[in-house]
Image (cartoon, rainbow over all chains, first blue to last red; front, side, top):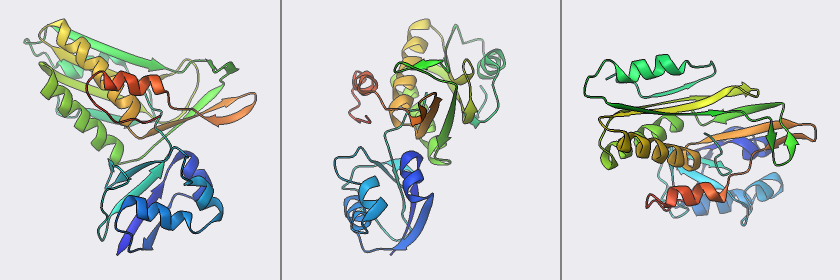
Length: 82
Length: 158
């Protein structure tokens, strides 16, 4: 399935603003795993133990959230607005 | 009551105009509560010369709209408006504002604080500040998560 990925703030600086990929990852956690497996900047920017927040279709979501074809996923650090 | 409630913009805002637009001459309103956040020139012991604000277009507006809906469910308020700037800002520029109107003060005070606690930890904005030691991303604060938890919302950010 086609997943559109967006990166923001420090994650964007490390990985660029985003990409569209073909993936069979069933959940956000699995997609993160898949990206980490690329190694390099992906492995460090999305590393476990690093505070990475996720959104699915523009809603803050837990790692267990299920993906479907056409999902929009975003990875970013904790938010600091206000 | 004006229908648009969330404004994300690079330009500054005028608090009086924003309040007038929210109030809209509604004579049921007896209380207006506002909060304005501004850029400080010090953070974590460093001088801050400027700050750049990034956001997630689309999600930001949706997230804040949902927060205002939640505020309407929780509090007896007549309306709320959020304006948040993005881009380059300097001390002492205004960053953002929340305004709430209600019949009596208690509900608008509470809703204003609720919206701020919510926005601080759940709206997709990020600040990068410039200091003499270089540019750095601002860290989220655990205290802000605790502030949100007071409202019974368990959604840790920091």
